[in-house]
Image 1 (cartoon, rainbow, N blue to C red):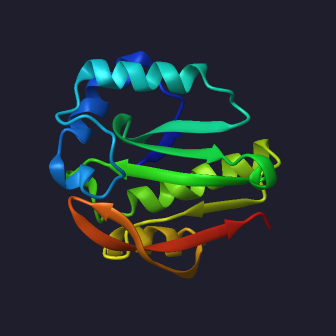
Image 2: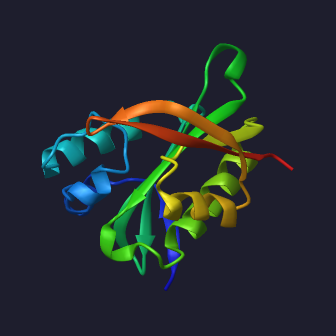
Length: 168
């Protein structure tokens, strides 16, 4: 299966909506996404990503064999953190556990390190999300610790892990 990241296009909105209109996917993400997620929500997100400053927002569709199946992005920090970026990602449930996101994370990191002055990319998955933790480990991230009682999701207090990958 050919995995690639690509710049978003408005035509990707339907595939984006299909991936995000799954409660299991959204249960692993931060709050704030509409549910169900509509094509209009997708168009709004894609428009925002296409108009964002390309030196601060690195946002791509994740594709498998040419089909959009998810999203990956890194957002530059501000002030003293202006050379760091926070990574976020998801793919449709039917593609979990196939190594797709690991490859997408590698590609995104290679892109950010090649085309910006970012020196550190970090991610904070929920500690119970073993799949996401494994994605990061296989993509060259190191676990720097556990952020205890760091979030409340679906009414539950949750730990998160802190992972980072540095520019070589």
